[in-house]
Length: 424
Image (cartoon, one colour):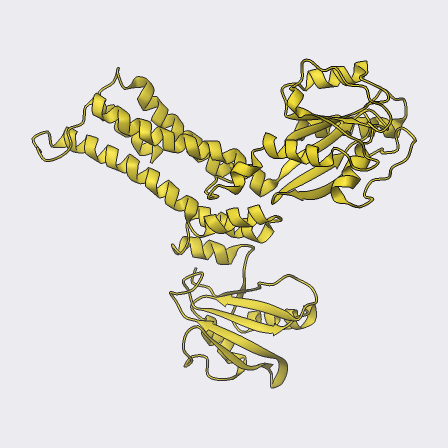
């Protein structure tokens, strides 16, 4: 933490501007030594200064240099940002000069790491920085920016305060029984407080599914026999000819992927090879990939061709996956008016349509909205848990609180401070 680090903060490649960030105790001093313009050691904090980067009397580039003095910076250290012209050559040259002048190369994520270690942000907010950079949808951006602004962290702090208050009151009752002004804790008075904490944790865990959907999107697998219209549905979603469509069964030999944004949530759509018995070696590999995709998907869209009707293979697949989230899309209504009999499937999730004129596509999207409560996510405040680490820790805390509820009639109050401390 005593070193001064530097790195390119903008994307690698040709562009109008590159930003090179320097952070550490000697950040201003080092940049000042290669800068021709105002004396950066004398300028006010949070100012932008025009000049040139100069090395061995050679002008390297015309730049704008932002000077930000500790502690009011992202890392809480002195930070200097060099705004140079974009392009790999000039950016590389300035980094090279900074390293020769006393900087060390920053490790990936080291600026955020320093902000965390210096207490500028907590771990949830640090994770949100990466999520914000990699967000692919509007909802993912909202989730990341809310976590970065401390929405989830404040929620966690509220729960920790509740736990600490309960624990402190129990310990005061145990250590200072003669203290009359404090709240007297009995099992009857303790239980409502513990149940309140349990509800707060439970609500957080319920939101975890929404957080996963917003951050990672919904993995959707298009499945069915060959030539039922899976690739046409993918193309209809993407509004482009991503997958090859022919009348020849087995055209799709490998999985084809595409992304579609539905109400601000990414649908990661996978068009799979038609599932059937085959002796073709290549097609067989495709079928195996289709089955694997169905196992990893959040949603299965199983396509049935109405002109062929429901086959034995269709029924076997649907029944074997009946416990998963699945929508049945009955395709080719332009060729037949028949109905499919599927008494064991939720009738609300059977959609009729055809891919010739995209009939049924809007209904299919609406079923996805309902199944994954996308309207509920839109109305929320985005204080979701969004990664495995967060979810795992909240589950552990929840288990400790439930231990107290389950054993409150059988154990003395002082024992519960152990679970409370671990939950905290």
